[in-house]
Image (tube, rainbow, N blue to C red; front, side, top):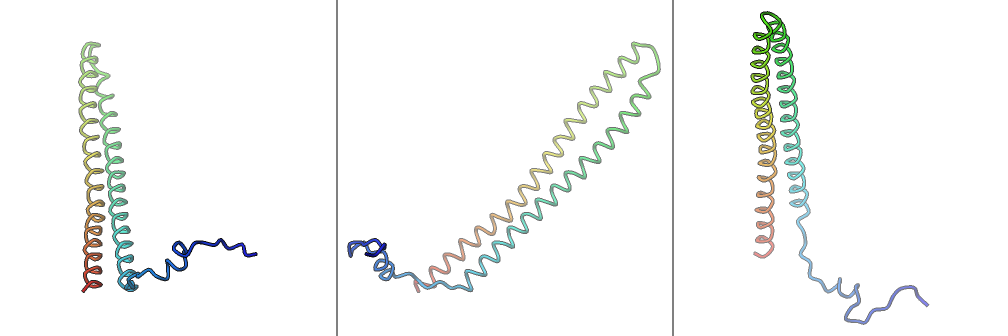
Length: 142
């Protein structure tokens, strides 16, 4: 006795597969499309990496600038009466907070720009891929 299951004739998988009328694929067109997909993905990754590097560079510049400003501010805040020192420290705190908010917004804008550029690359490729599929279907039907 065979281990192979038996199916009624109308459900036999081998018969069903043999009766299917699958269109012949243009293998070269498919390979070219996949190559373009990989190129687009690579380009999007490159854009994202460049964006991340720009954010890291700018972040480092901000940290260096902040440290230099903090050093200067501490030197300047140690002279004068206690009331003058308190006023200088309050002004320094306010200024530092405002700069931090501005810097965070700048970094967020850089990240958003990088993400937008990477998505633009992928969206363009997706649109082109859909046009290619339509062209292949039209070529097959015509």
